[in-house]
Length: 114
Length: 116
Image 1 (spheres, each protein chain N blue to C red):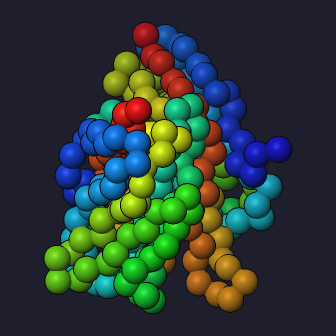
Image 2: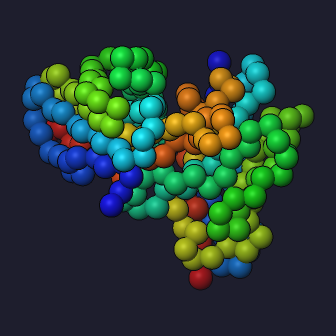
């Protein structure tokens, strides 16, 4: 069975500081991994995805994530936080070799301080 | 116009009532999904459909039913609503990319359901 753990339900950073949101997964087969962002009163938007190609994945809005098999991690980073990055972020895993069935983490609320 | 449209966006109702949440999409995707979101729990899959004739239970299907009326429409019903079904409900779709392989799921804006 697949599962996702997001460490830290709330993360606060100052504007311009590094953003690091942690995601660890478990999967019995090589996984597909995703990061989604949710702004208030909106649905989830895809930030980036890992599907067994390059281990460093670049997404939208300056975010990137690195797949580390040895650590079963897929942490999300952004070098410099912007006020508009304040949102909830979800990591998701699929071990069916596709995006068909996703298991989501519990989410991390990112606050950006001026 | 939104690619994935959920109606209603908000609904307040009473315990024991039957409720239907509707989802329609213009993306031409074969696969459609219903999730519920609760604070601190992320999203959990209720039902999914890979085709008009293919319906599957997800992680938390008890108390819910679905209908895939057409490729573009997938509705979720609560036959007799109870307060612990108060949540934010999302519909999502996915399909194949041009070069093959599954594309990521695309989400609607959600329905906020409150059951008193």
